[in-house]
Length: 385
Image (cartoon, rainbow, N blue to C red; front, side):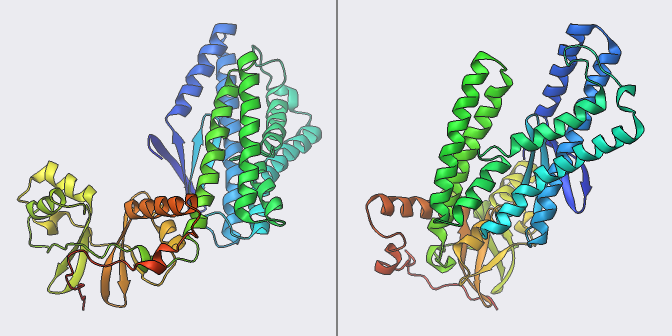
């Protein structure tokens, strides 16, 4: 996520904090100081919010580690002012797995709250670190205990992208089509977002931010599942760009610039003597032009590590491979044969075509049965040996 800084890596998962989190800290400091003019109260308030967000990180690791048990990796965890976000590589296809992954986060929050409760009961130390000011007179650890239970309960509300929305969808999906279950859960989530917004207008304005987050998240989840449904059962070969140009490592950047300006291609396989040696993406091309100019050899800026995918793999697999921050193009292979390119752009175009077919009442995917993709220039496909 842009405007995020890495603060650590735990269990192989990177943790980031978004720049907007600093706005929350600044707002907290100003609010507490304005109400108390007490430096200790301000410090305690900041320490409390940091402790709470440490609990949020643990909550998110509950999701990540539960997903790992089902073979699903987590790219990273990002802290935002309204909580944390775990970027799973994919949502489990099995509703039972999604149910366990969704419940793991609130379970961690309940466990933390229970642990604090037990420690306070055993030691009687709850009142040793009290706080004053607009945050109330509840002692620090008691308030942290309460915050974890509130975090668990709030996240179990049936609203995407909260955990409860995923629990609700997983339960519905055991009795109906997954897409229909998602639409119902997303509609419920957006209804709750509207309710949060009303409460925010007449009470806590922070609820307006939560309402916006829930509304957008529910819409994105519904759109994501619709796309996933459109991709199901269709091989990569059906949507491969087969009309493409290649460059060699000895070419200068002026060559791919000319090809890009006089066509639609933005990423170029690098082929030397019939052998695939790398790829020159738009990012490397523009970076090379700005740093060293158009006379720079392709070999100096090309990427020697690249992602490939078999022409027989499904579009859903290809779309998952394109989710990485530096993954905008896949090289489609059939053995040692380079068939073409698969990019984010032609994935989006395919989804738009499928949506248009659905609106017209045609069966999605039927276009592939009527017309096979052909190269516009009729040129032979490159053979990589």
